[in-house]
Structures are given as structure tokens and as C-alpha cells.
Length: 76
Image (cartoon, rainbow, N blue to C red; front, top):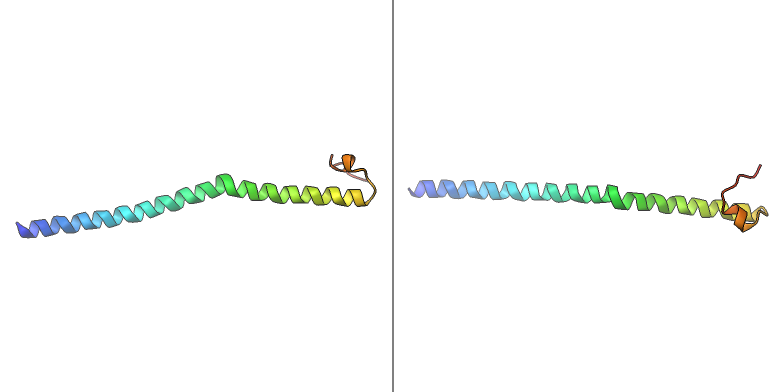
């Protein structure tokens, strides 16, 4: 009888450890999904916005009115 209690206790301990590992894996998966859905697009949008501002500033330096430069027209 005492051996069975020890065996059951060990099985419960192993199950708790396995659950802890799976919980960590789930947390990492959720964090990666959050990164892909929210952070990455924000970083890309920020880079695109900076590129647009740089392009507008370059056109304004070339003498194009700011209103037209913001429209993204190409100068030939």
C-alpha cells in the first residue's frame, strides 16, 4: 500500500511537470502570435511612414509644392 502511494505521488509529480512545460510552450506560442499580428505590422507601417516622409521632403527640396509632394506624384 505505501508503495502505491509513492508511485501515485511520482506520477502526479510527473504530470505536474509535463503540464508546466506545456504551459510554457503555450505562452511562447501566444507571444509569437501576438508579435506577428500586432507588433510586426506596426514596425512595418512605421518604416513605410518614414520612407514616405523622406520622399516628400526630397520632392519639396527639389521645388515641388508640399501639397503635391504628399500626393506621391513621380517627377520625370
